[in-house]
Amino acid sequence: MRRLLLIVSLLPIIAAFAIAHFLGIRSIRKAGELSMDLGELLDKLKASDTGDMIQFNYPKMQWAGTPVTKNGEALINLKLKDSRKTSEVAKELSKIGLALVHRTHAPMVKWRISVIRAGYYLPPFVALITVFGALAGRLPIMWAFTVFATVVGGCCVMLWLSRAVAVEAAEAIVFLIEKKHILPRLREEEDLVDAIRAWVWVSLIPGIVLPLMTKPNKVIE
Image 1 (cartoon, rainbow, N blue to C red):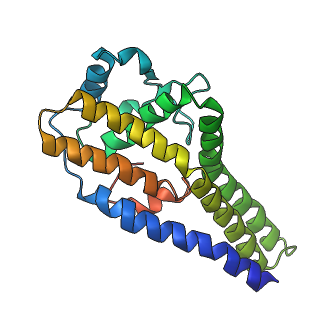
Image 2 (cartoon, rainbow, N blue to C red):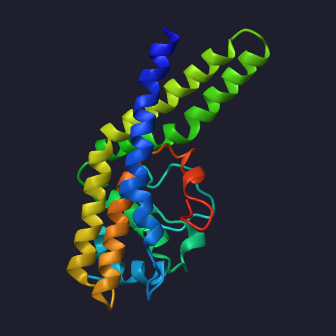
């Protein structure tokens, strides 16, 4: 029973990590830099004729896994405001896309955010319980590992099931970028669009595990 549960749990984990690596992380690693920083890009988008649709803020403190507020306002990382790295800018612009989708599909976005947050908080919480259980002798070590793998696998499955929301968010911001031509060079625009779409695949990995695959010299979470 335990072995079967472990195998079933590891399958979505392996699949999610493999897909995220080959379709997402590899593309993000190749991304270069833009001629404009994140703050300038957001100001340009805000100043456009569709600027009233774009709502964002630079909070001084932000809970992990909360890209958008309940009111549909994107929470942009203040530390990345001056960043010109395509991977970092794409990550933050994806939040703008999610905020745009929130305008018409708020319940779906809230569901997606709850899944993302579960990927940040549920695995370490379960790991803490299982470790204490194993140390206390109340839970065999292999069962502790199986329970943890089951939780991580479940998070991967839920992230996949809610992926359609992330895809729609990515395409929403991509549409604005391509329509407004806010970047001076086409090559920059294409690289940014590719990075935004790559982040959709990267998001298949639970947030608590993601930094292990995106550092060092790679992408800042």
